Length: 185
Image (cartoon, rainbow, N blue to C red):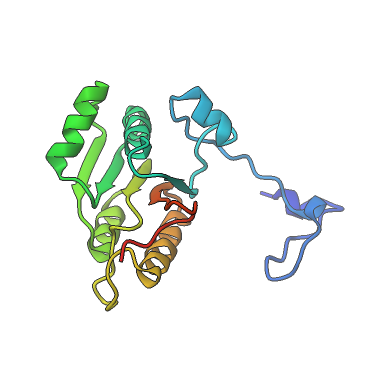
């Protein structure tokens, strides 16, 4: 079977070298619809498998509520993992009940340790994962506090590598008064 890059006139793409955009092989990507038309529009038609999406905003504006709605809708077509490092399982369930969203395919994990999170994600194939929030997940091997610059960088890099294996990850980030992602420490 030949790929687009094997066709005459199309050189194979060498990813270690800069490639003219017209020479990059086209791929057909099936996006995952969120069930919310405006969110799908912003995402270019839905979530891309392997996507890593940061949803940032002021505390209390509805980031977690929006992502819980998205998670519940996507869970109707496959298993979704919603990781909360800020709230308990019961608090997250209460929010889901208020939204009328308790699908069987939505799984909750109340955990902040990145090693545990990586293990749970690796145990099965998830349609999507939500991590709430970047500032509360931590690597116990680092001496800095959760939310510190070093922790935030490490957690984001680790979760991006997980996402690139094909599981889209939504990551919640809190913004400070200056409009940047705020370290908690």
